[in-house]
Each structure stands twice: as C-alpha cells, then as structure tokens.
Amino acid sequence: MSEQRALHAFDDGQALAKALSASIAGKLRVAIEARGEALIAVSGGSTPKRLFEALSGEVLDWSRVTVTLVDERWVPDTDERSNARLVESLLLQHKAADAEFMPLYVETATPEAGIGEVRSRVAALKQPFDVIVLGMGPDGHTASFFPGGDRLSEALDLSNTALVLPMRAPGAGEPRITFTLPVLLKAQALYLHIQGQDKRELLAQAEMPGSELPIASVLRAGRPLDIYWCP
Image 1: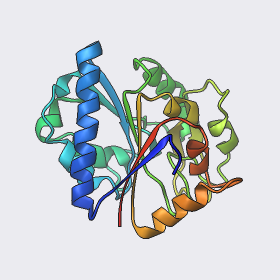
Image 2: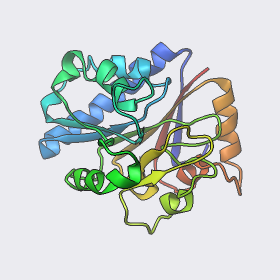
Image 3: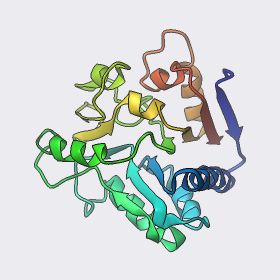
Image 4: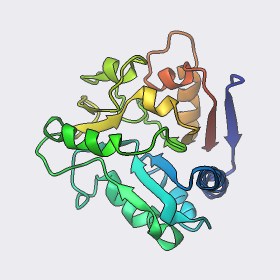
C-alpha cells in the first residue's frame, strides 16, 4: 500500500459502516464550519447500504449538505436499478432527511439527450466536492469507468475539462452517466469502500504496474485515498 493510500480493515460490514460514516460526517462538519455548506457524492450498488443507513443517523446540519451520485444508470428512481432510489430510501432518512439531493438522471430517452441539462445542474454545484465515496465492481470498474466503455479514455483523461459524460459498456447494463476522473481526484476527501476477499485481491491486481483495470487510474493518481474494507 502506497504512502498516499491508507487501508482501514474491519471484521464485518457493520463495523466498517460505523467507522466510515463517522469519518465522512466529520469531513462534512468541517466543510460546513469552513464554508457554511458541504457537498458529497456517493456510489450506488449493494455495498453501501449499511453505510447509508449509518450515515443517515449522523448528527450534523444536514440542511447545509448537498448529496449527489458519482454515477447513475439512465433509469428513473422508480426503477429498482436506480442509484437515486437507493439514496432516497436509505440515506435521505432520519437526520439526513434535511439534505438536498441532486440526481444525475433527467427524463430523456438517453443520457446523450439529457447531458446538457445534467451539465447545467452539475456546474451549479460549488466544487470541489468535500467528500466522494467510490465503490469497485468485480471487473475493476469504479464510477462508470467500465472496461470497454465507449468513452472510457475520455472519462479517464486528466486533461479533460468535462465534468460528466455518458457511458455505455458491455458490462454496464443500462447506459450510464458519470463524473469524470479529474472531478473525483479534486475531492477534499476521497474514499474507496469495498467488501469481500475477492475485492481485496482485485485491488492488489490494480496496484500492479501496467494494470488496465479502471480503478488503477484512481490508484495511480497519487492523491490521498482512504480504503475501507472488510471480508
């Protein structure tokens, strides 16, 4: 593990969620104290469910927090596959019910058709993000940086000034929309939340020189990254 990356290992998902939730809440409080507001982007999927439940009970001024997603499937929040649906049902509850949520999906047939509106929404956010929480899939993708993605090289290009991009890939299922790598790397605090021995082994592969796994682009960037893991 490099000096820029810290691995926090836990016995189980509940202990991980409690610790990661406390760390994130601390970062949000610092941002609110400094700027009067805080901005966080979270990832979807099954891994963060316990985290969202824990974070929803953290004591802070949620009315000053804006929550959005790192990436999203191009489906409405009535769809079970929607990341927004997951956030709305598990995170924006209890104390966190006062937070403002900015979805990445808009009601158009494709992400290409809606990208203009999404870019306008995103441009209105006062970036950089205070907190970004990434996940990692079994194919090594993070955000919607999928192997074989039609705009993967563009999304990973550190000189790219686009904030969000559409993404289509064989392993992605639905078309997606995702923040680009430069946006993620500018976050004040960047976390990677993974569970399972298989993910730990995949991360080790990504750390090897020359790895083409998409998550390797985050690891190679040389910025501080807190990795929270449990079996």
